[in-house]
Length: 276
Image (cartoon, rainbow, N blue to C red; front, side, top):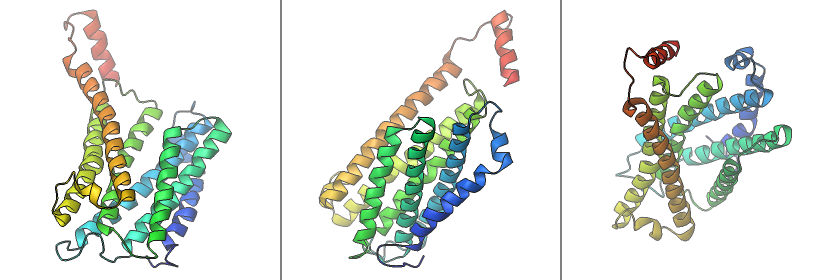
């Protein structure tokens, strides 16, 4: 976790080199290709490799973030000025990963004609924010508590990618118990690490400044106000979409009128469930 210079932590170099190397290694593994059905095309195969890299990165960020938050006595150390090399490590690794993932987004567009404008916008925005943060480290080491909390937002990513992998494998999710379990785990984890986490940061700032949590973002500087409020509302919207899909799934499974057990439809439904 040493820093080469105030601008370039070693984790940034690691993210820019090791993540592409991991992608290349996974791309050559037969077991990765065998995970998908034989009819899967090259784009889906590359997409799976990239999601495995993303899950690896998210796991590292989550573990290090938990370590940072749990090993520092925040009653004795200021949440915004405490000095630690873990914060540039986390930001550098995130910047390295997002750069790699953004390159992959452009590659998908060029090679396969597919890509997400929303993901691309998100990556570019976070890359610019991370680069600014590393520049700010030349003056101070701000916000280790909040960098740790933000790193926990990666916690829901492996579950999201696991859900995609099972769908891509050809497993039927509609009305399946696996779908309900994975969707519930994703919805709960997403809420806890992204919405509750954002709220808790506002609460922590407010407690420090002696104001309410909803007043705190307006007292920490314009750039931080825009960042925290935008992130909070974006996460609320995305979670609301997930929650709506989850409620619909539960209603379909539990609240739909079950046919008589003696009817042909019931027998067909039971047979389908056995096949699942």
